[in-house]
Image 1 (tube, chains in turn brown, blue):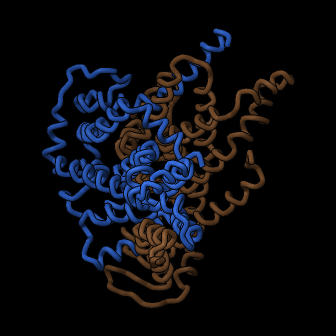
Image 2: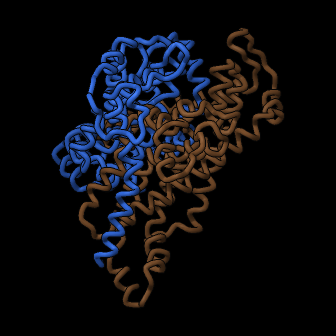
Image 3: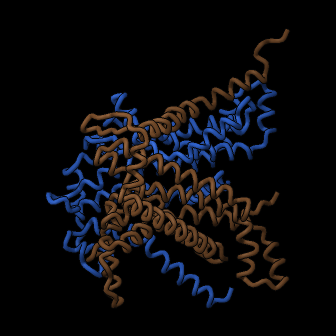
Length: 296
Length: 276
């Protein structure tokens, strides 16, 4: 006699039960809020005034006319591009250095990785102190005979400071991923290239880069999305200032929603942030066919 | 490698290491200096007369022990919860054939594109409607069930895909059910992936800043990152010595664990599913 609970049916049930917590959680805490954020963006909603009324796309036309929009997008773009470019190239440089046959590379690997485990706000507070006008950075520059700027009070220097602080904090993560990828490149490829007389730079361009390109893709997606989420560093170091020079989109969203209590407008900015994250990820994923090398 | 090149490489590594090491070193030593000495330049590598006065102030100015406990228990609960949720669904997506598995996996993965910053406004409203504002619930359930756990699920799935199916076949012949196979065979083998997941989940929770300042308003409920920024004088200026002491207290335990277990830390992160 055949029972209803065949092995296959039991497996199907097990599969659904196993993924149920994750799916229910995603529905409740990811997809419902995503729908709500779009819904809220069509409303005028001030929590303090207690108003909530449908206004169609008025928040979006207000967004288009917001004098802060362009500076915020500019700061966001400069921050993200700067952070991704510096973070990925420094991570790759460190990984290549640590992949040499040298004693003590494990020690340096630990050193470069250590800021990753230091509490983010603690790390930022220390740098806030070091970047003061009379702080450690300018003290060091002074000894070198250079009169350093007031880092966190100048438009450009503030942005550079936030990028630098964030890079040193997190570059170790990408470095470790690159290092693992470099160690996975078969040594005989380099041998063959050396026999053919390829220079070190050619070997790097023609062997290393293609072989580690899947890791470059992964780290760049993680780093780009991460750069759009940077909040604590800006809240602690600059509060978006001076002016709007470091007001990135997440920080502006926080200000509008939770400091000025414009929830409808904050939701509109959230939709914009989601659009940017999604567009950038899709573009990078599409580009992978162009330059990511696959062994298969 | 020529010895001259070797010297150049060591020199380069040492110079580049300065911004990575100096801030932590300076944070710990300055926390034991009086304020006047903190601003002195060049900085003394060691405090002239080490004092723990500022550390005492950390605990008198704020309920810092309570805040420490808050951060610690939240991070631990989030880590365990994420490991449970992510290993179950990661295993199912890698190993169990059920209708719609691939489509559901893609749906879950899109969560990576919807970071909690995007949904913070509706999340605030939802927890407000449930009467859970100024509680730790949002800091616990959103990371375990929401977007942050998706990366963990992805890593677990990638790892389970690499396990040989034969191991499970043996269990199946012995009459084990799915859960028993998962629990007794697959999960013990997934220790490296679980290690990586637990490390970055813990750090993610430990570092959370936007969510606490949005959801919490009572100092007794604050988490550490939030508390660190509250050591200010009557004019809103930071009390540096106290702030640096609190920062040191926040950073040192995790650093010690890292130094002891740094191989597992680094290699765990590098050699699990994150390879893509």
